[in-house]
Amino acid sequence: MSEPPRRGFTRTARLASLPLGMAGRAAVGAGRRLSGTPAEEVALRLQTQAAEQLFSVLGELKGGAMKVGQAMSIFEAAMPEDLAAPYRAALTRLQDAAPPMPTETVHRVLGENLGPRWRTKFREFDDTPVASASIGQVHRAVWKDGRVVAVKAQYPGAGPALVGDFRRLARVTRMSASWLPGLDLGPLLDEFVGRVEEELDYGREAANQKVFAEVFDGDPDVAVPAVVHHGPTLLVTEWLDGTPLSRIIAEGTDEQRDLAATRYLEFHVAAPARARLLHADPHPGNFRLLDDGRLGVMDFGAVDRLPGGLPPVIGRLLSRALEDDAESVLAGLREEGFVRPHIDVDADELLDVIDPFIDPLRVPEFCFTRDWLRTHAERYRDPRSVDFRTSLRLNLPPDYMMIERVWAGGIGVLCQIDGVVPARAVLANGLPGAEFGPMP
Image (cartoon, rainbow, N blue to C red; front, side, top):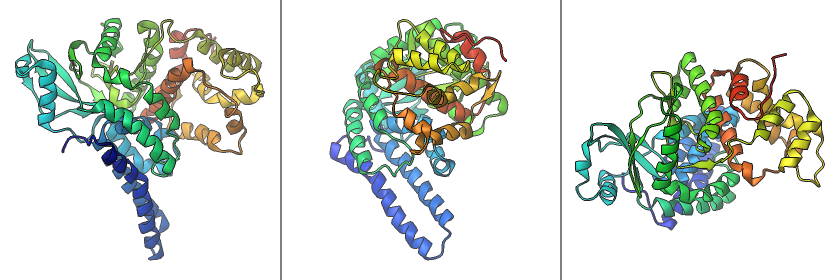
């Protein structure tokens, strides 16, 4: 394919084609229904075509468009099944694969970072990418010292594309939300804008990855590849074999699902205490299950700095909620700023709202499933429900913004994996402030 389009007008037109394409297909669908085609068949065909267009447009544009697509892939587990099913395959493909940039462009990036004799840095270099992401794509190579490495090359113009796409997507989503039903992109776009510079800085990403690689060096459950070399738009790390989570989600065995889900939760709980950093890009394309049972973790461009680790108040409030101490939970959330001083909230109704976070702690093992997540999500979407009205009274303090997104996204991924997890034990052992006590 050609390079991703850089002109703002072209990118805006491609993004605008998503809702316009949906409208056009709906018109065609109406004609088919009039001709006698069953409504269910027409609806499924329209959603499937929309999903394929979604993958095509977001994948080819790269930049912010694809990053939003990857974020949407995390939350499809919360969408109603009749809407989510056609999109699932397309969004899963965006987790670690998209149309590649031309070989000559890759070589140009290598030359800009390693010099005109860049080939001397490698014994071998495979021009065919093994994965594509929002701002770069990955190639397998053999470094000059014989190590097998992953070479991540940033797309030319990724910076302006990333910033511009968020603005364009905001305009497009105001025009129409029908191209991916059931998902509000506004909060995602607002947060992504604030993280643009960090994600584009491969030097910063290399520094983050070095911290994670050091603290998890020799760990029996987690593997983080070492950094070999980095430049302004190039990152070379040791190669990591294994089965991508996206493949386990699609076709994994029960044993693979249980192990992957457990390791995934353990990592997100343990990493802030050990690295003082929160891995803030939880989508499945950044994780894989190694043959020895370890969880391989990649892509450290998005992190949140937590000098004190996860706030102990999270563990304390979960413990109080597990004891059904509604008044204590409300008082703690007020103190942290989740409930503003002038807002009246019923303590028991508030406890019902956070119930999804408590379900996995009530039993020794819990299976995160799409059905479980959808059941709770539907409660929050229904304007007639008490949960909906109570949720509107809550506030999200800035210090918890990234933590909340990672936890919400992580739960979405766990529901996609569909594995049985000893969540109570994992959080009791790794979450500061957690005091769950013995099982009743």
